[in-house]
Length: 457
Length: 132
Image: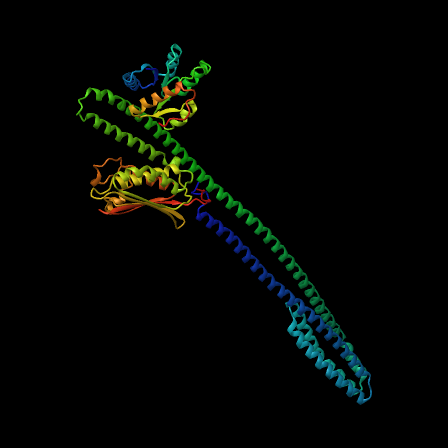
């Protein structure tokens, strides 16, 4: 359980990336769409504005041209030279205005058709200049009848100019209306796009969320299957170890029970019985150690207080160490670590057992057990002044059945430190060793701290 | 001294147990499975039954239930469980006996436990559990 069933970092990274991609994509589309629609809107607005200006200018032009015709008529009608002179000046002024308006309108033409009509209008107007000049000249000489005749000759052209101007106005009117319509269409499209984008974003978020949760669920299912498989294997191993132990312990009992009968038949100084007993004892320890080793995983649940566990071990060993004139010093802080109390006791027992067993012949065993939280974990150290190990030996010391060549004569199964290591690892911690040949060793069992309030007492 | 019944499917062990307990002055009968054990119990009540847990046909715990059922619990014959199973204390709790010894045991420990069980049988209440 301590390993947790959260999906690994990789999946979380993928999920975050997916959300980020969706978000950035939506933002980019929105920005592009807004820029595009703004450009289109601006274009349409410009067209609309220029059309409206054109309409105004064309209206102006039309009015001026009509005024000019009236002035020309007045000129023909007028008799007094002074009157005619005044009208001449007015016609000149209005001509100037017409030219100015034409130049201005020239800049506001939008469409090819418009330009075509405008070019025709301009050439028509230019063609009318000469007859008008003749009319005015005849009028000045008061040849009114001839002047009127010339005027009536060009009336078709005048009408054509008027029609063209009307066509231009209609064209621009329509253009302005079109542009305004286009603007409203763009606006509507933009609204639709934003709405669609919002919906798409919502859907994408939902899809991404669904995908993410499915990913997490799949990962969890995988972990659960794996955990189930491991649990099943642990149960099997547990049952197997129990069966083997049972079947080995039976014959061992037979051997042990046979010893008294055998002893009665042997001479007093015969060592056979002692050797037999020792052999049986070794097999017993081996079975117990193998059983413990095989069952560590299936029993590695729960929390305990290392101080309480160490106190028990201290009580177990105190008489034996005192008998060897040794010393056992204990300084263990209270804490709540995730490790089964029974297993930790076994581990500490094995470590102290080793410390006592492998003491130097010339020095009494001095064993120190200390424990304190460190870096979010809990370090339990067992230090001795024993024979110590070389770096190479220290590397192999926690392998099952490894025994140092220098200490093979001492009793042991070669499983004690394997058990300690497996207890540490099954609890989510580890075992490390520091050793100095001929001076002693320090074994550190690092255990995870349980996230709970330490027990009282 | 006492009339004992050894029930164990390990024939070698049963034979050695018999020899050892007889050398201690007890009279011993042997059965190799629960059915045979029940037959011997009904033939003549033993003072104490030394019972293995795992046996063919009728296991140790099953045999002890049957013993209680057949005499309606009037004669509470003490049972000493002897077994190599890994959770012997639980089996003992199921059987309801305070006496159990994990194999492999020392002959001395066995004779001490037998003596204690016999002594407590005569006392009104056996009391606390024995340590294996």
